[in-house]
Length: 168
Image 1: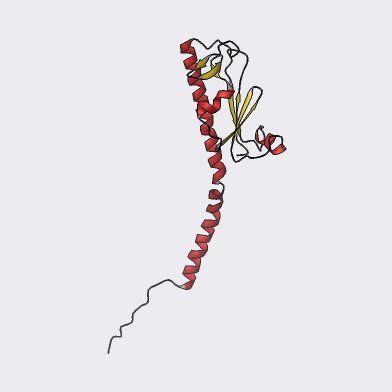
Image 2: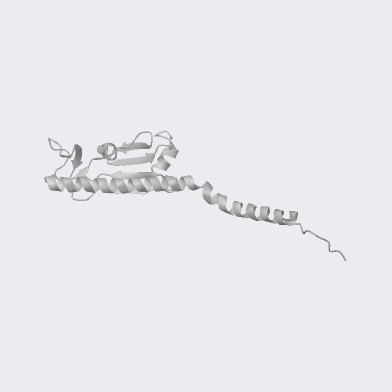
């Protein structure tokens, strides 16, 4: 009797390939939404980083003001107190100096000053200053995407720095 050499074919069947493709499709469907919304997370992270930088820069200016003995002087006196060229009011930088203090670029940030408040928004918010969508962005609601630097005229109360990032 002769032995027949039967070679068994090795490979995947069509059904096995289809099952693998379906499983990869299911994994992709569950993973893709997490990566699609990554830009809003990046905007929030950038805004939180800017908020931290603003808080630390304000503290440094205040500490330098204390060292120079100018922490109890209003910006209304002549000459106005300053720390390394940054005008201060009771030791804290006035909001008109924040752009220079943090070296904020107009291509990256939109700065809006009103009375004692300074609003910093990302540059991608391009709504007109008098539009409802702009006021939503500078507000505190679900569409807000801003950092607010609020000057205090009452000393020695420190100025407040808050962020509203729900709409970023």
